[in-house]
Image (tube, rainbow, N blue to C red; front, side, top):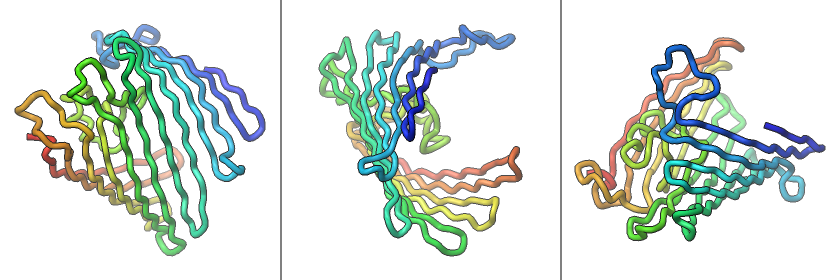
Length: 254
C-alpha cells in the first residue's frame, strides 16, 4: 500500500491479493481452511479531501477487482460526501457504480446510501439517525447478465451479526447485494463509558430470489429487524458489547 499526503487531501494507491487459502502467512496446522470462496485480486485509488466549498469532506475512489471463479473484472467508481449542517445535523451520501467485464460486458450494478443524523444537546447526548441503503440485485429475467452489486471488500456484519448467515443461501455469507433498506436508529450515552442504541431496519430486495423454493417465496420484502446494542468501555485496552436481534421474515422467504 502506498499513499501520498498533500495538504488537506490524501491519495492512496492500493494493491490487494486475497487468495482463497492463505499462501503468504499460513498458520501452523491450518488443515487447509478456506479464507474466502475464491481467489481475489484488486487495485485502486482512493482520494480524500475537502468537500465542495471546503465544507465537510469528500471521497472519490476507483477500483478494479478480479474474481477468478467467474473470470470477470469488476471496475467500480464511486464518491462520498459528509457535511455538518446547522442545529447539530450531519448528512452523508455515497453512490457507486460497477461495470462488470466478461462474460457480462453489458451489465451495470450500483450501490448507494444516504443518512441524516440529528444530535441533541441534553443529558445522555441522544442522537437520531434516518437513512437508506440500496444495493442493486441480479434480475432473474436477464439470464446472460448479472446486475447484482458486488460488495468487493465488505464481507462483514455491516448491519447484522446474524443475518449474514441467512445470506449464505443467496450468494455467500455476508455477501450484501440485492438490498433495499430503510434504517432508523436512536443512540444515547447514559454513562461516560456506556453507549446504548436501538435500531429498526425495514429490509427489502429489488428482485425476488428465484431458486430453492423451500426457502424463498415470490415477494421482495426481506423482513423487519429490530436490534438492541450496549457498548461498554472498561479502559483504553478493554471494551465489549452485547447485541440482541429480532427479525420477522417477509414474503421474500417461504
